[in-house]
Image 1 (cartoon, rainbow, N blue to C red):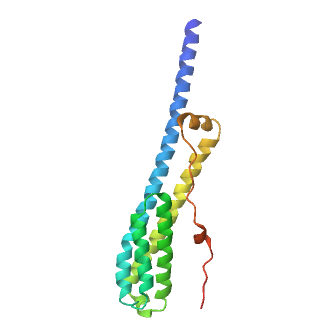
Image 2: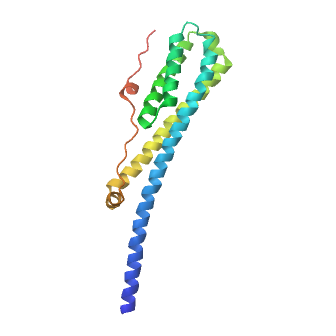
Image 3: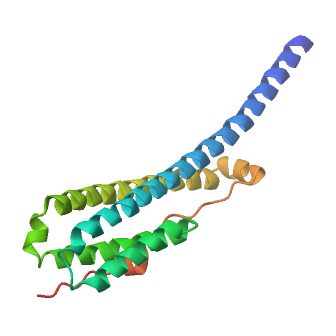
Length: 185
């Protein structure tokens, strides 16, 4: 009888310790997923900024009168490359995206440029990278959601506070990016 009670206590202690390890490891895994998805966003933003010099060189010959737009894109690219931290990178990335939209809008007025193979290829690559950035942002926010749910439901909430894991912030779209663009003819 005493031996059985000792075995039951040993099994109970082992189960409790296993639960503590399991929850800690889940939080670590979710944190690593979030960090990885944030790194993927940075990679895609970097790829996009690396394409900009090629795009600008193919555009410069055609858009001699549009130096202001080219400077805006160049400045936005520099800001993205030099950005530190999530918020700064997202802000710089949105500014670059806006500047690129201006180039593509202006390109509509240059039929030779619109037909240029290099320009079309770069435009397609940038479009593909934009899709990847959007997917990476969604994946990041999905990871944040899973992590935040773990930190708010019982018993995860208890373990999160015990281990020092706190809620994390979602990536937010700036208000300027939410505005409906004005299209004038």
